[in-house]
Length: 338
Image (tube, rainbow, N blue to C red):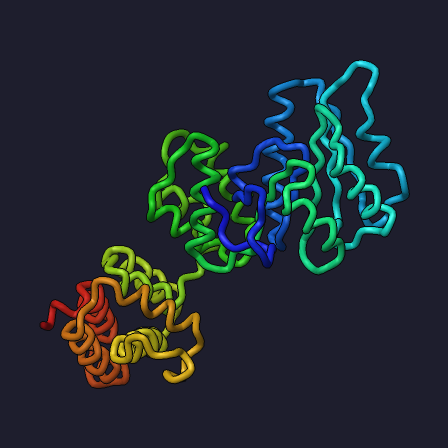
């Protein structure tokens, strides 16, 4: 699993791996602002080293309170030669003493010792980071960039289940991420709870049983499912939203916002985001949403939106039926009216 993103500004000479691909090396640089991924990577590394030798000696240092000689003392050979794991936190706030010792250590890493350096962000320690990334010390880098997209959070949750030798259904995975999209730590904890408590595969019904109170279905959840062609998911999300007290008008407005952005991007292929009055991420999202759509389908969807907008504002007696009809048209990518 290759790392996405990263903190290095230039191409590194050492392997740059995702958290789930962590492995032993003389020096392991854990970079990036996603602390949950960093913690999981370091814990997995510790467990792997302990599996190799239960006598593993684990030590912790704080780089921001470091005094000269501490790293070299911990890494020096012991009487019985036990393997060692030295975890160094807050390298982005390290003292000058630490930087001097760490650069010296890179020139001759101790045998049987793994040193983990946790650096969240910033330029403090740049000389040290550059040396590691250039290959001095024979290290690797574990890139733990912040997860902002739902797709990346789904990849994280799927990896949690895969590492545990378990499976979660795609619909269950989407529901789980929807329930904990704002807190990766809580998402990780929810994954571990399901893995521990539920025998066999995890499906959407299981996720709903455990976390139905956490799933906050929004108008955009309905729209995203329909635009992706997932009619069943969209209908379920719509009914959940309505049962939770959502008003039909904002739901139609969410559809309208996304479909109109898609139409704008489709009609100006290759144009810069600024010329469309959109942010780059909006253009990227619209291009992804356009997969499977054609111009006729977009036209039909826009007509269906106009009808649904009128219906939920009083032109028809049953706004719920109008919404379900709209979801059907959008889920079929406009082909129901083509």
